[in-house]
Amino acid sequence: MGRQRGAGPVADGRLPARERHGQPAQWRRHVGAADLAAVPEVRRALRELLRHWGAPGGADVAELLTSELLTNALIHTEHGAVVTAAMNPAGLRVEVRDFTTALPSPYAPSVDDGTHGRGLVLVQALADAWGVHAHGVGKVVWFELSGGPA
Image (tube, rainbow, N blue to C red; front, top):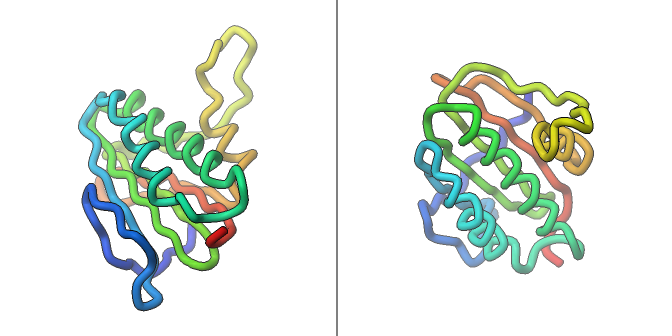
């Protein structure tokens, strides 16, 4: 469902300072099952990665959408998730991989739903592109934001 980009250097838990040799700066984090405490940690790491990226507010949107996708993966699956963020001159791509095959679909939440059911609606409204594709045992939900260094 989405276009794939070439893989660049991957740092598990370490943040690359900038792109090197034309390869995208990339960050990856493994999150354990039901580890909702990791969501703010992922947001902080993404904020650091995006410190000099995009138009004002772009990093805020990226943090919001990443936390929505990660929270969905942790709440709706019994396994952990893998979050990958890759920046290049054209923009940012964030992927959240989980280990269940059930595909998500956005729906219009009712007033009675409280704060539930709005994650994919936000992704659909704020991302420049987004999608879902099967990935081995599981799936990847991704979004892209255009822009480059501020």
